Image (cartoon, rainbow, N blue to C red; front, side, top):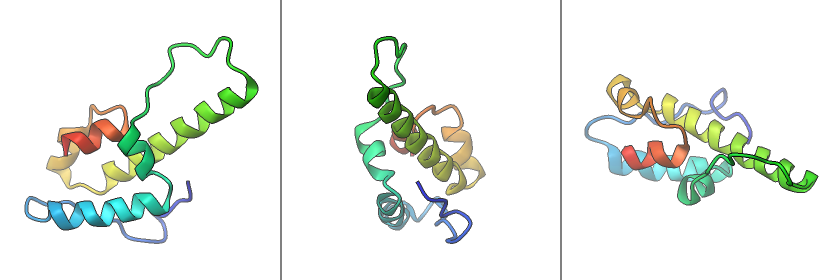
Length: 98
């Protein structure tokens, strides 16, 4: 996932703009291949024993997308929104809370 946070200001969620914010974030995350991981969710494997090299690589890529997307969500909310999602461990969990 490319770093967009340095090039494009993230829309900020407030108490009154959820509808517009969610549309903007879906588009932004979609452009960064992060929306898919929000929709489908990511479950951290308890073990990778027996994974092939390809499976390990794919798992790491999905984990990386999820964490980058979660970070973008952390940045795109105000302090009270952050307090709501601070304990989320996946981007899907954070989105569902919001």
